Amino acid sequence: MMSMAVARGTGRSDSGRLVGHRATGGLLQEGAFDEAGKQTGLWKRYHSNGRLLDVGEYEAGHKVGEWKHYDADGTLSRTKQQ
Image (tube, rainbow, N blue to C red; front, side, top):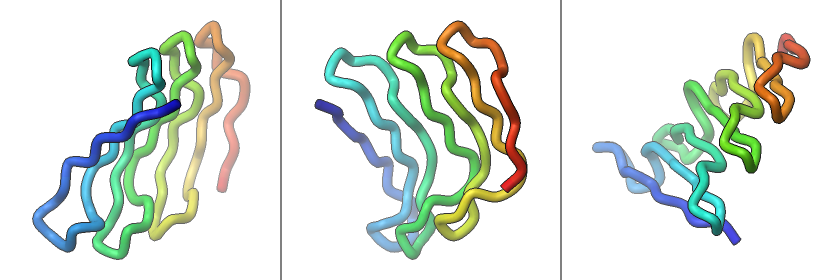
């Protein structure tokens, strides 16, 4: 089970920052949505141990630029250009 908290922006009700937590309370993911409700800006996802899983940018709901992926021990495992 997962819980989500969205801090709404000043625009439409579907924009804002999202912080998702695991049922255990650990951080799952964080990022933001634009006024159209699409992922935008910096997004991060986390392994169940709390270490970073991946990080990268979204524009209008699509991954853009360089994305970095990490192993559960925190080691950078790969980078991918979107």
